[in-house]
Amino acid sequence: MKRLIVGIISFSAVINLSYGENAKELFKKYGCEGCHSDYGIIAGPAFYMVKEKYMKKFNGDEEALRKYLYNTIRKGSQGKWFDFLNMKMPSHPQIKEDEMKVIIDYIVNLKPPKKEKGEQSPK
Image 1 (cartoon, one colour):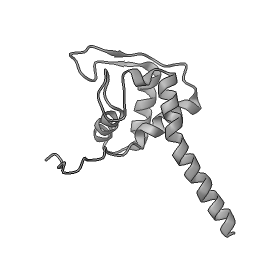
Image 2 (spheres, helix red, strand yellow):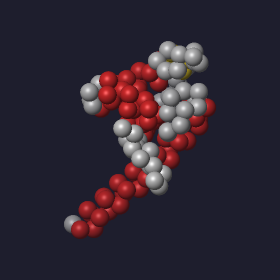
Image 3 (cartoon, rainbow, N blue to C red):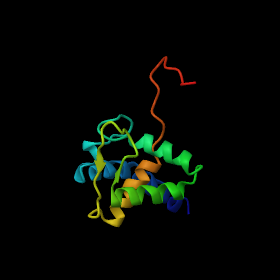
Image 4 (cartoon, one colour):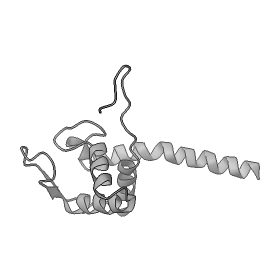
């Protein structure tokens, strides 16, 4: 029984470590990295900014955030961020359902950025 539990925990750890890498591969495959990164602004908002903004908008409802991300990625978006750029996020109907789950899981599970030594939290 102990071996089974340890095996399941080990397998879960491998899956959890590798899904981030798979998401990064998907970001590259579908061109997401051209406009987005985890924490910094490129041409579009950082994935963490999106997560935070819409978690607040949906009062912490993760399922609502997932639906929002799904629809935005699938159908595209414009005018929600950085009006001065007037950029449009294209639709991505070609992303497979299992890939979409990996992408959304990655964004939803992003942790806050690490603080540099001596950096203080914003007030």
